[in-house]
Image 1 (cartoon, helix red, strand yellow):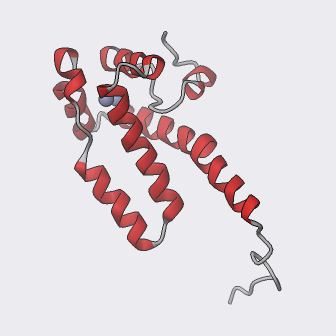
Image 2 (cartoon, helix red, strand yellow; image 1 turned 135 degrees about the vertical axis):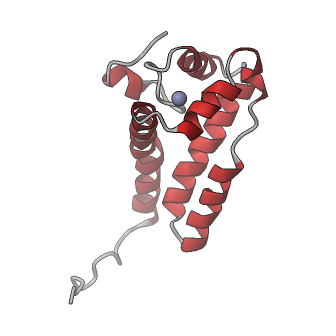
Length: 138
Ligand SMILES: [Zn+2]
Ligand SMILES: [Zn+2]
């Protein structure tokens, strides 16, 4: 049986919760997003290849998000996995925004280039993972 240390987890201040959330969303999430997307291309996952096929070239701007992903977000939330739900929701929002909103210039172009060259720009919500793993195209 696993016993908890007396008082473990009971002294987390709101600031520590906030810091954990910020690190999850802005450090862990971009890394998970980057490697999952890179792996999906490595495995040639048909679901994602379809995304490239359907939303390339002229139709790039028409992409309106993915209800399957939104269902998984809701499922995570129902399970009480709130951080995971927020991390996946961030990906869903960012992926939709970088397709539809050219005003979000840098990320818009970043993902647009990925749709043209599948071996670069795997990140949806940050530039730095592509920079540190050597897959950045600008
Ligand atoms: Zn896309
Ligand atoms: Zn892709």
